[in-house]
Amino acid sequence: MSLPRVLVVDDHHMLREALVELLDQAGFDVAGEAADGADAVALAKQLAPDVVLMDLRMPVMGGLDATRLIRDACPATQVVLLTAFESPALQRQAEEAGCFAYLVKGGPPGILRTVLHQAVAAGQELLPPADSPALEA
Amino acid sequence: MTTEAASRTPAGEAGFRLLAEHLPNLILLAFDAELLIWAATGAALRARGWTPGHFVGRTVPEVGRPADAAITDAYCRAALRGECRRLATSGKTDPSRLWTHNYVPLPDERGAVIGGMVIARDVTDERRAERQLLASRRQLAEAQRIAQIGSWEWDLASDELTISDEMGRIIGLPPGSRLQMRPGVVQFVHPADVERVTAQLERAHTDPTPFAFEHRIVGTDGTVRTVLVRGEGVVDEAGRVVRFIGTDQDITARRNADAERRRLLGRVYEAQEGQDRRLAADLHDGHVQSLAAIGFKLEQARLRLGASGSPEVDDLLWQVTKDLSTEVTSLRRTIGRLRPLVLVEDGLEAALREEAKSACNRAALVACDVTSELDGRLDPVVETALFRVAQQALANVVDHAEATRALVEIECAGDGVVLRVSDDGRGFDPDHVQVLADIAHFGLIAMRERVEALGGRFRVTTAPGQGTVVEAKLPLTVPTEGSGP
Image 1 (cartoon, rainbow over the protein chains, first blue to last red):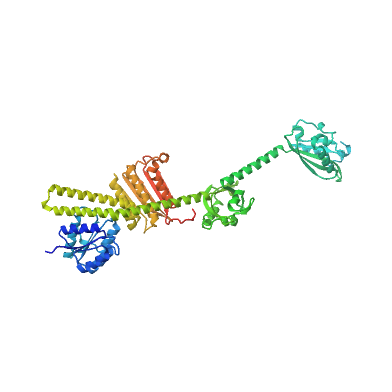
Image 2: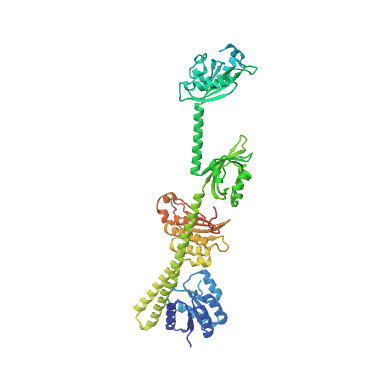
C-alpha cells in the first residue's frame, strides 16, 4: 500500500521544514513543498496529492483562493488548512472554500497527523467534506 | 420781599410753598430784581433745621458759597433777563453734599419777568446712586468681558432683543445694538444649528422653563464661535410668557481645546493601535510560527524514538510538546488582545461574543450574554473603540466585580451606537473612586477618554452592592476635524 501523498504549503521556511520532517517521519509521502498559494495550485495540479496542508496567509496567493482552485482542479485532493489565526469567520470561509479541516498552529500534539489521515480517508472514500468529523467548529 | 413781586407771582406764595413742600431734597428761593430773597421753602430746608428767616431779606449771592458769589450773581441776573442757568456746586455748610442750582425767571400773569427763582436740589444721594449704578454697569461689563458671557433680554411681543456690549462683541455687533430675534439673531446662527435653535425659540413662546444648550454662531466677520445659551422665561399675571432673559457664554476656546484634546487623544489611540498591530504581526509571523515549528520537531523526535526509546523520555517529550502547545495558545490569545482578528474579520458582535466567552472562562460568571441590534459593520475606528471599552469593562467584571451574570448590549440609537456592559456584582462608590487613583486602575479614565476622543459619551452607573453599568455612546461615523459639537 502506497503512502499517503501530502503537499506542504507554508511561507514560513522553518515551519515548512519541520512539517516536512514530521510528516516524513509519520509515514506520509511529502510529494512537494510550496511557499505561496500560486505555486501550491500549480504543484497540486501536477502532483495530484491526497492532501494539501495549506497555510492561510501567504504572499502571491492566499490559502483560501488556492484551496478553491485546487478543489476545482483536483476534487479528490483534500485541503487541510493550518493557520495561526483563530476566527469563526475565517473558519466559515475555509469551509465554503472546500477545506476538509481548519487547524490552528500550536494545537495539541498528534492532532495534525490524525486529521491528515482522516482527510486521506475522506478523499479515498469520496466522503463529502460536510460529513467530516474533523472540521472543527 | 417786595410787595409787587409777591402779589404778581402767578401761583402766589402759598402755591409756591405747597409745591416745594412735596419735593424732597429741594430748597426754593424766590428773589426780586435786587436779588433779595423774599421767600424760602422746601423739604430740604426743613430737614436741615433751617427756617425761611435764614434766607429772606438777604441776597442770593450772600446765602451761597462765597466762592460761587460772582457766578450766582450773574446767573440771578440772567434769570431776570428771562434766561435759565444751571450751577452744580457743593454745600456751604457741608461741602460733602452736592447741589444743583437752577436759576429761572419768575414771570407775572402777563409773562413779564418780575424776579427769579433758585431751585436748589441736594443731588448727593442721586449722584452717588448714579455713580454706583455706573460702577456696577462697568463691573458687569468688565465681568462679562472677562468671563466672555453676554446677556440679553428678549421681548416676545415685539420679538426685540436687547443685548449687552459683550453679547454684541460675541456676535460682532457694536455696543448698544438692538435687534429682532428673527431674522436678526437667527441669521448669526451657524446653518447646521439653525433648525435646533429655531425649535428652541418656538418652544420658548409657551414654555418659560429654564433652558441651556450649545450652538455655533457665525459672527459678522465670519468667525465661527460656540456659545452656551442659558435662558429663563418671565410670565405675566395671566401666566403668559412675555419675555426671556438669559446669557450667551462664549465657550469657543474651551470647545476648541476639547476638540484639540480629542484630536490628540485620537492620535494617541491610533498610534497605540498601530503599535499593537505591529507587535501582534511580529509575534504572529515570527514567534508563533517558530514555536509551532518547534512543536512539530518535538513530535517528530517522539516518533523517531518510537518503541526503542525509554518511556520516561517519551513521556517527557509528550509533556514538553503539550506545554509548548499551551504556551502557543496563550501567545495567540495575547496576539488576539493586541489585534483582535475576530473584530477585523467578523465584526463587533462576534468579537464581543468571543470576549464574553473568554470572561466566562476567566471568572465565576454563570452567564455573559451578548445582544446586538447591529445590522452590518460599523466604522472600523468606532468598532475598535467600542470593543476596547467592552474589553476593559469585562476585564473589570472578571477582576473586581464578583458578579454571577454580565450582559453586553449593543443598541442602535439614531445617529449613534450604544454599548452597555452591565453586571450584578458588588459595584462601587463612584465618588470614592473619583477621589482615589483607583479610577485609573479600573481603566475608567482610559475608557472615557477613548469614547470622548471620538465625540462620544461615557457613563458609569454603580453603587455598592448594586452592580455596575458601563455605557458608551459613539456616533456612527468618526467626527472629522473642524466639525462642531
